[in-house]
Every structure is written in structure tokens, then in C-alpha cells.
Image: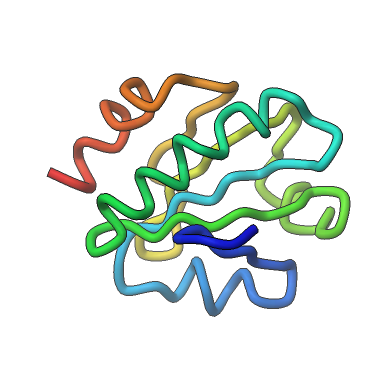
Length: 109
């Protein structure tokens, strides 16, 4: 997916997410997931507006099952915010952009 969000894989997850200097929102998604597609434009917009404070990346659970399993992702879309290598917030389900922004207020305000 082009734009402000980028994709991570099981192989790049540690370097891109766990070792990041700033908070990272990971969108766990799959091609077949309708709600995942619904939330994608909101995440893209947030990445463009707040990319200086938080990174937004996507992880396809079909192509990268190990990371999803490690973090117990059972339903998608699941968005985990990682800071200092730890999950500090989890948002489950397709939410409107305003709701996602409220959930991220601690990281972007």
C-alpha cells in the first residue's frame, strides 16, 4: 500500500517496530477482511497528519502469521501501539478516524 503507511513483516518487525524511537501503531490486517479495508484510509490520513510523532505500519497476518500469533491477535483489524518494545495500547475492530485519534491522543498531542 503506497502512502504514509508502510508494511512490515515477521522478519522486519523487531527492527521497524520494537526498536523504533517513536511509538508505532501496527495494523494487523488481511486482504479478505472488509473492516480492515474500511479502516485503512483513516490510518493513512493519521500517518500523514501525525507521522512525525507516531509511525503507522501494516502487517498482513496471512503472510506473517508468527508476529500475529506472538501478540495473540485473534480478530482483525487489531491495532496495537508499541512503545519501547511493549504493547501500550490495543484497538480492536474498525473504528472511525476520530475514535482512533482519541485512542492515540497520549502519543500525538
